[in-house]
Length: 389
Image (cartoon, rainbow, N blue to C red):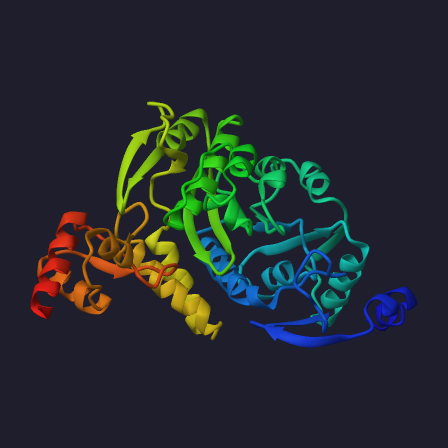
């Protein structure tokens, strides 16, 4: 570590650093980080909960894994926070190895510094372009984690090819949520090959998953989501790889198109084709596996990870038990039918009294998932308003 600290070039670039702790891992980061592409070495403290979730979900995936060796690749390492936490905090009875790469030489130096700080010997650091690193390791990694600043699409093809085609895990983050949520329609069509909708944020995840499924299918690989969330400025998903043309076909069958009339959603299958007024293709199946979420929640609680990560997992666990694409926004419904907004907790209780399952969602304070129809919700809102007259 002293050798790196005495590097004069490194000192000139990184004169102000500090040591922080995330989870069980110590990290040297810049004090004056702007959390933008202009940072000499990228580190985002807001994403600590994201990394807590990632360690917890991959630990849940590992718990189901029977193999002597487990290889992880973080090709867009930045300060190394994500990859180093994987190397330091994942518990595995076999040999766990992590490859961390970054094209930025200052980032590589900081990753090595953090590597020595934590005394880790199961990490290899590469000064290399992400796509080059991934392309050199065809079908090698059990987990490939694409966590870029912006869209994961430029790295998606090489990420798929670098991941084991059976029982691998492809993780993706997108911070271009404005694109995925429809603010930049043409950009979304160009980058993701899909038409976005300015509506439910969950559709942003489903659009990204749909893009990955279509890209993987050309290699006869199917992808199945096991954990997904929409938080702050980004969306993230974890996809298990399934080998074979049949698995790829099955994944494609789960794609479809959505159109909106207020809060009412109508659907078309992918095979039926695109029609003007619809968005997509979106992934229409389950985006969270209840067992994985339960295990991840137990891990996060046991290790005293951030309150934010635990809260998100608790929300998502409840969401995973209800098969619904997106949610109902109570404020939007009330605006459409011109009624006063009831307290959401009171409305949810009324839905349960009427035999429906209902839960709040993690990404919208006014959103609920339920097996009730929109008309059932509207009736209960109207009944609430009648009582207020």
